[in-house]
Amino acid sequence: MRGPVAPPQVPLAVSRAASFDTLVRDSAERLERSWPQLASVAFGVQEVPLPEEGTDDWDGLGSPVPLGRLVPARGDRPDQVIVYRRPVELRSKTREERALLVHEVVVEQVAELLGQSPEAIDPRYGED
Image (tube, rainbow, N blue to C red; front, side, top):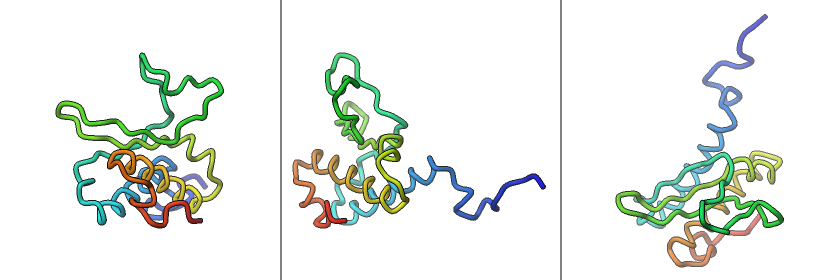
């Protein structure tokens, strides 16, 4: 018998990438309730970090791989918070661990953007 293992409306049919996108979106929406100024921030997912030309932020050789990044606004482009999917997935074993790690990465980037501590952005930051 050939065909999908589960019907499309069942969570099993959701791809890992789509599931990860949902985690980032949920985390951003959770923070926007307390921090309305985040409504203008673009939250996104990138597969892996790529070093920017002309910077030494990440050389890929011996330095830790970043899990997320803040891209400041420029011209018409809004501030962006990017979470790197593969490095986060490799550091989490379960969906619950992944959700916690995604939220921590988002909180850290938002804290940097707003000039606050992560604990000020989310008082539950760092709790397991």
